Length: 577
Ligand code: ARG
Image (cartoon, rainbow, N blue to C red; front, side, top):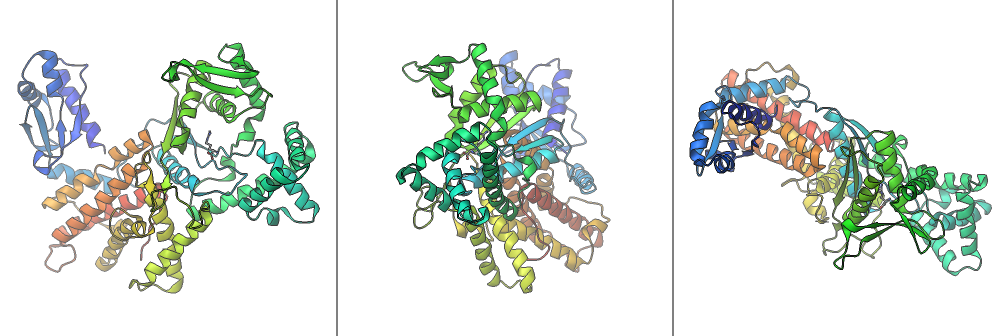
């Protein structure tokens, strides 16, 4: 059910009947209940075009548009808006249909192949908070795209290659020679990296050995490759620990790290040279991008091969683009990284398109996000100023949730409490991130994210649990409900309208990769439910059986949407908490 799309088709038909076929059909949500739920805003533009008064155009549209089945009232307001008041009977039957559908009435979209590049940590180091947003937002986006019927290819573009591995492998080799096992040596990648770096900077001969390792690694030396595999393997398992705690859907099969493109780099550069897109400049292979010139008119400089012959992050991204669009045939490629990489992807897109690595209709969508800040407004750090390890952050979330829950009267036993604490703690961290518009920085705050009030995971999880307990008290299973939904009360009307917005909002999230839109939807839904529940008693003894069944049915649909929405966001629900 997509009311917005339905209204567009009815108004397009009306305009066609008036002989107007190429005009836009703007339909918007109304700002206030007295203006109905939706508005047709097209009369003003048409009036200009046809040199008539907007209100006259609106009157003609009103005569032609067929909405008897949907709307109880249409009126013209202000300069020529048409306000649409949805009819209770229609809302009731649409909710009834949604309730009978396991997808809550959400239709599938025309399937596309979508590559989503997310999480993508650097394996030389531990995953840190900088990778939280890409991992969580990316996972919500892939789940939603799949739900809408798309073929999604997850790609974890891990940083598993580059000169820094020379130093790391040299250090690892020494540790193994001292009879350490890799798992122990690499149990803390942060420490390991620091040790290697100190040796690189200070120890005689070590830097040379590190460089030697780079050369051996790149030339495919067997023993060196084994060492590299060992390192990568342990590091990946560190990431997997985070994914598991986060309940994120990425698996090993989704890893397509930088090293996977090794053999493509030389051909990519050769192709760029041949097509005249890069030229030699001081020994390096460079693309000049006039589209992104600075104030003085100097084109942006985009290096694809260094003067010594080495390749760069950019070269790998061009190879990845060629593979995704050419071999995987992706209609869309979505890449989630922080906003500081925006220019890199803009440049990559321009150069790649010039090279013909993508067809015009294939899209390359860098989805940037802001930084996670501490309460001091500066980048989120530990108290001693170090980077915050994700594993530790998530463990703290669960501990804090457990303490909060222990102070509440939940009636749960110790095991149940543990499970609830996990779902609430992890849910809170994820939701705090998902609910903010991704393009802005956001302030990480334990107290707000774990609060049972406001736009938080605990609030939504609790709203869902409350409906479950409502059904337990009513002694019926939501699935066994036999009810004719009828909409009589103002709050029922408002709730029904909200319930029928789901598809519309999901489509926006799928288009823009903005899970916060779904979060706002769910928050509004829960709030509407709370007002409905206050105004429209369900279990009181004087409520007629039919009314009670109808209201229970609305509650069941709310619960289904909450569960579905939270699931798409990667947040678990609970029957008791
Ligand atoms: N490894 C990079 C980082 O941690 C992110 C990679 C994003 N994807 C890409 N195709 N460049 O910043």
